Image 1 (tube, helix red, strand yellow):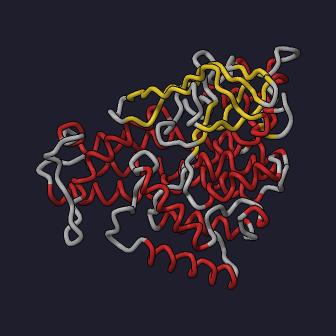
Image 2 (tube, helix red, strand yellow):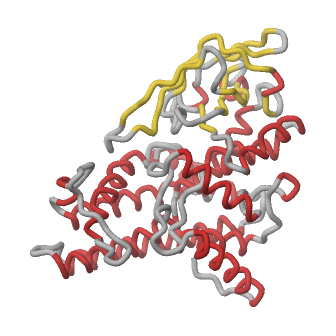
Length: 399
């Protein structure tokens, strides 16, 4: 992000940059890791580091453990995190359920959950999608029936990222069949240790286990775990999805990825007998860079949009659509550039390695291939690109 910074913002930028360089020095094993390549322990460690500095949830209200940062400061922090190739915070607590609890949760729910989200000691997952209810989320069928002081939950969630890590899950459940489908949905927090919960793994095309199915059979949940009002969960879900989609766009990751593609291509040109043609690479890389600049412009507008404005609510939609398509096209370029090595060394004990003294860019072949395969799904999760474009055409273009 290119911003014309004021003197006080330059001081803040230096503070942030110095901290990242201290905590993540060159060669640190956590640099460049993402949520799908980090372990649970590594993810919790990184959240604890940020929280100790007071930067664990920069977008939360100060009274809930957040900051008083201005929009430019938040933008600077994001840019410096990307520059430092910092590992990822788990979005399910910090970016998704945390802000919902801050905005709509009872004082008791805030006291119970916000501290453990901030310090990284408790991991969350998201219970939204169901078989047959993905982009058409309002058709969900998992039920929560009131029984005394509890809700009794029955149903199934699918594509639940890192449910096998999570201690808690935030769920959309059906509490009424009256009126429109959206009017009978509630937002419930459920302890994953509750009797009646079963988690089954889903292995994806990249060979990894990060997705799951979650089954609920007569799971008793205290009614006090309801966020906000019963049957008002659709409002909270839309609030959450705006944060999720903006994050999925991955502007910082894209910025780093484009720079890394240049480094890898230059290395291959020097060391490989045959390499991807320079003119073809430069043309494709330039086209991707122009699209990345457009995405950053949207990000700037979203960051500085007036709170609660129509622009602030709608911009995450094109950001998600453009960002995920860009991630896929970057992966395709990496795959073409690496050639046979992208397949030969994928998930292989014979893959080349790098050292602190000699950074072998060829050693990135397995991870770049993994990312390319994982990103095939990025235009689907968080709302499919086709659905996002349909919403944009209706509410922005008036079609």
